[in-house]
Amino acid sequence: MDEQILQQSLSFDLESLGEPQPWKVRHRGLEYAGEVIIAESVDHRWGEPLPPQLNFRLVFFTVPRRILPGRIMDTRIAMVVPGRSPTQVRQSLRRELKSIQETRQRYVLHRDPDTDALRRAMIDREESLRRELERRYGMAYSQGRIYTHGDIGLRAQDVFLDTGLESWSDALASATLLLAHPILPVDYSSFSRSLTAGDVAQVFRGLFQGDVGAREATSSFAAGLGVVSPDNPAIFDASSCPVLAILQRELEGSAGEAAPRALVHTLMYTYGLTLELSLFHLLAFVRQTRAELRLMPGHGLTNHRGGAFLSDRITRDLVPEVDFAALRLSELGDMRLEPTVSWNLTLPYASLLVEGLTATNEDADVLTQEQRLV
Image 1 (cartoon, rainbow, N blue to C red):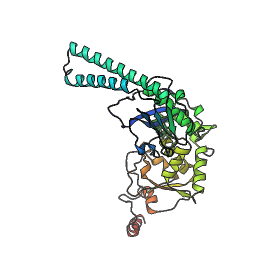
Image 2: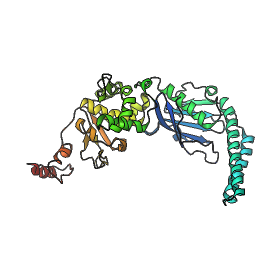
Image 3: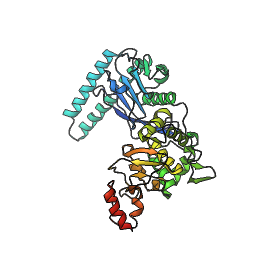
Image 4: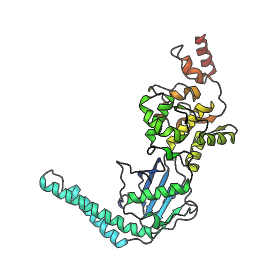
């Protein structure tokens, strides 16, 4: 487990059961985004495969539950049930917590020394009650069971060593990710710090757009990502990149064409990359191999100057034009090893010669605009 992330918090709130709380963990050099859920009843959707924006899901049940085999369909999901439910203590603490919250809302409205002191006292008491509630549940969870996909073997007593939902979530997410992805296709040991989504965008700008402000991120992470050579760490070279080798195999195994969503799923689910890293390597693959990424019709992709991205696909030459921070998986149509030629592909270059040219798939419109270039 890596360093803590500032400005995020979790609440063991029994009044908001079933509501996902976003949470990030830093594990083996990467920052993973996931969610934590406190629940009493079972929702079958929590066991379904994770969407691309999540790397893990943790569900903490407040009462003993039996999770049926096959209900958890993703190796990055863990569900915890207590060995017993501290029912009487829970009900007592919940009543007092609710009483404090109602008092704060109804009576402590004015700003004066007396009400400020009362407000602070109630906040302190509320925090104390929550810590006691978490302590009781921590004991119950340590005697309970952790359910995972295929029962990958997490022991509750190894996870619930510290007190508090945030500590449990860090430990459980890291343990789940480690068992789901024992080997990562990046050399995270060379990272100077944990790689965040913002850092990935910085590396892209540094390597492909010459952004001098991104030099620190590029020097910190590019070598470990396999997208520069040791002899020239400032220049893009992914000829020995393990992730690109994975993409090459996937595309060759599907007749040279695949949906980006399927490729991203493979990189995230099988190899433990984040969504941002997966998208980064898709573009790196295009740049390295001269493949192409076709975009969805009516896509809203922008270029790095803030204008519209005029082409209907991303090719090797157009990779530096992409505003990576604004790139969305939903805008990508398919990926091909062998690029094809179309009017919309040549549009960014033709627009440098003639103003007012537009993207189109209609043959008559293409012919009319081509005549303007003659």
